[in-house]
Image (spheres, rainbow, N blue to C red):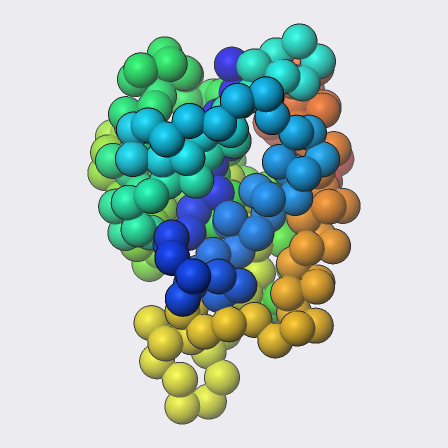
Length: 186
């Protein structure tokens, strides 16, 4: 079983914000692969899918960004998912919009959602897909920047980039290692 989690905040006021880049990317995967069932459990919306005869859970935690680890830990425990079978999709302010990257392991680098995941999983050794949202413009505080809406052309860029890497799920469920996913898509 594979677990793909998009980090974000729930509520209409957060739709299309930079901090919800993980949810935006996850929506593209859900659109491509579909789902057979949807449940609200473990403080999350879980979309159940099957790709190449492998169960895949697409997850949107409903804990707000800074408490994402609570939901992810609960899902991993309940469904007995190994850390190697987890990918977190999240915003990355150190990358410009349009630059995205798969990554294995690493610190939170100031990202509070990732910090929560590390805290609750007890490790920083998990797979990620980092989605560039750019640095704050002159005069912006980081918190205001990440909670600001994407410009229409930026949002389109995020959607197109997410669609372009969506085949990683197909490759991953066929047994391609995450190291090879990075080699193929980065």
